Image (cartoon, one colour):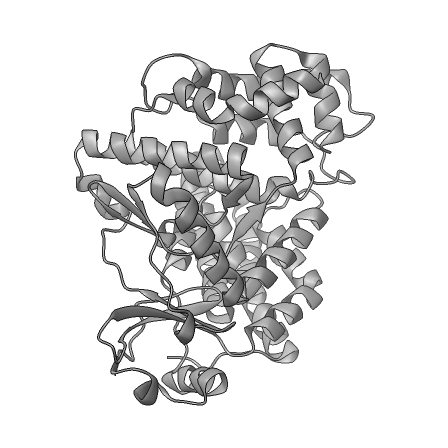
Length: 447
C-alpha cells in the first residue's frame, strides 16, 4: 500500500519521472535505429517489431505513473482504455485497461484518516466489520467491504485524502499533461475544451454527496422502465462528501460475461442500448463513465454502481443533436453542415470537401443502425474509419468540438464496445423510434 502524493511539487516530480522514463525509452530506440540503418531493408520487419515493443515499454511507464498518482492522470488513462485502436494500437490501449480496476491502493493509515475526518470515528467504531484490503482502487477513491452494526453488508467508497487538491495541482501542471499527451498522441488536436470538461467532471466526481444524488435519481428513473437494471441503495447516514456507503452487491465482471449464452448477451445488450437512448433523449442526462469496472452483471441483470460521472444536457443541445441525426438519415448535407458549425464540430470556414468527407464517414458508421430487424454491431470499425480520416486532418489551430461531446462520446464509445464484445443482436430501429420519438417531433416542428 502506498502513501498518496498530494503536493504540487511531489506530483510534478512524479509526472516528470514517468515522462522521462517513457521518453528516454523512445529516444534510445530512435538513436539506436539511426545507427543501425546500414543493415538494410531486410531488417525492416525486425525493426518494426522492436519499435513496437519499446512503445509498449514506454506506455507501461506512463501507466504506472498514472496508477500511482491517480486523480486527473489516472482518469485520462481510463479514457484511453476504452478507445480501442482509434488513437493507439489496440495492444497498447489494452494495457490501460488495468487502470479500470487495478492501481496501487492507499494505506490503511490514510483510510482511517479520512474516516476520522468525516465521522470523528475510526473503522472499528463505525462498522461491525471492515475489510482492510480494498475490493478495488480507482482514480478518486477505493472501495472496502464492511458490515454495519445493523447487520447489512455494504461497500464503502473512500476518497483519497486531499485528492481535490491533487487534481487542482495536476491541472496547474498542464504543460506536463500536454507533454504526456504528446508522447501518446503526437498529432493531437487542441484539447482546451476537453480539459475544461474534464475539470468540471472530476470536480463533481470528488463530491460523493453529488454521486449519492445521482444514484438515487437514476435508481428512481430506471426501476420501473428497466427492472433488469439494478442500482444499489445508498446509506446516507454513513455517507459524506468523501465517503459513500452503499449496499454491497455481487455479480460477474464484464470479462466473465463471455461465458453467458448468446441469448443472455442479446438481452443484456438490448437493455443497455435502450437505457442509453432513454437517458439521452428523455432524461437528457447520461451516465458517462462506461469503463467496465463500473458494472457487474448477472445473466438477467445489469448492476450499475458508480455514478460519479454523469452529464446533464440542456434542451437546445439535445434538439440540435437530434436534428443532426435526422440530417444524416434524410441525406441533407447542407443541414448537417450548418448544425456541425453551430455545435462547433466544423470551423466556420470549413472546406466543402472536408464537410462532404465527414458527412459520408458518419453516414457510413450510423445509417446501418436505422435499418429494421435485429442484428449485431455491423462489421465496420468506426475506429479504423476515424483513424484514417484523423490522419488527413491538420489539427494545429483547430479547436476541439463543444465540451458536451467529450462525455457524450465517451458514453457512446463505452456502449459500442460492450455491444460489440457481446455480439448482441439488437433491435436498433425500434429502440430509436421508441425513445427518440418525442424529441424528434419537437425538432421537426421547429424546422
